[in-house]
Image (cartoon, rainbow, N blue to C red; front, top):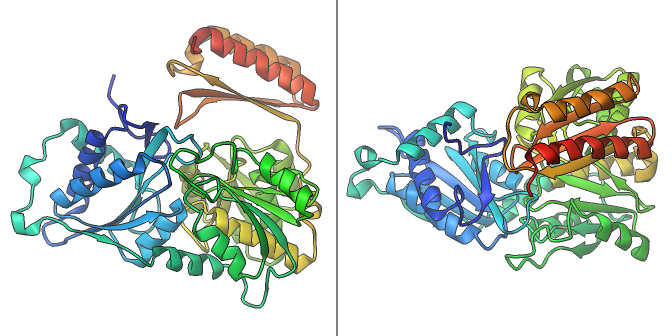
Length: 452
């Protein structure tokens, strides 16, 4: 079987184990240096990271690999993934690299690339980097001793990104009347996010701002909004904001303590942009995981929903292909191409807060635009990822569930692109039924390829 490094969102795995080893990071740095360097151009590459303990060794290895190939590196330290995309453009760098495993626990880590325009690196270049890494022979490409690259620590990246994010919020508006609960997941946004909301005059209650290298996403942030839910009630706050470890996704909580996911937030923003004539081509891009209630709500407003494969890379690809400016995922990635080139939790949060202020509405009132269908999602840890159509027991289980649901529900079974997980999603008319049916399929998956 052909070796493969890149998944749907860069390279990811357990830190200090293949493929996420310092040796591999060094080779990836060298391979990227070969790809970005030309005979007449000395490239610059921005390197950012989240707060995982293992980021230090990968940062050093990548810098060593790039510099050894004649590439200058710009080290920005802990910064949200969308912040690295922005800084890459702001510094007119040739590429950006983020060291992060996003929403995963601290033991994992990952490496993902942005091109000079701030978009994820094209798959063709990822494949070229992959090929060079596995060949692992860079002797013919090494520069002369006087052409080795140098590393520079960038001290103003935080401030630049904070001002960029604030610039997406109207100057005539203020957050002065809002009490906001903010959970930064002990991740990459722990320094910048509080400044954004404080400098826009909000009163904030902060959580997840004490990273220690081991506590990123640890029962906090977008995957664990229960902390924000509890705090909303305790403080009588107006709204809650939960980011993930690299702050490219957003989950919100309304004033009643109800979780508002990416589908509903996307619907709120799409409707607002539609009313203002800003929703280009009246299109919004979601994914195959989008709740059917979101799709029906958008269609009732005359908004066409394009469904991309899961992953913000694929959402953005469909957005560019269909000339759309808004897209996102149920998990909380929201892409506003008028502002940034990747999912940006802080930019997305400010857009929702702006709508609340402009319409003098509570988040619960705005969220009523989408009536969600009961949905059950079960994650099954697997030992391998064979084509699902080759698994007869799983196919039979899916067939039985689809027969029971008929036209009043749907089934989606897929592998995660970043973890050894098979995701089983069932939608139907009743929550109990959807949960039971999802568990039935999950059991079939577990029997065939589940971890013992």
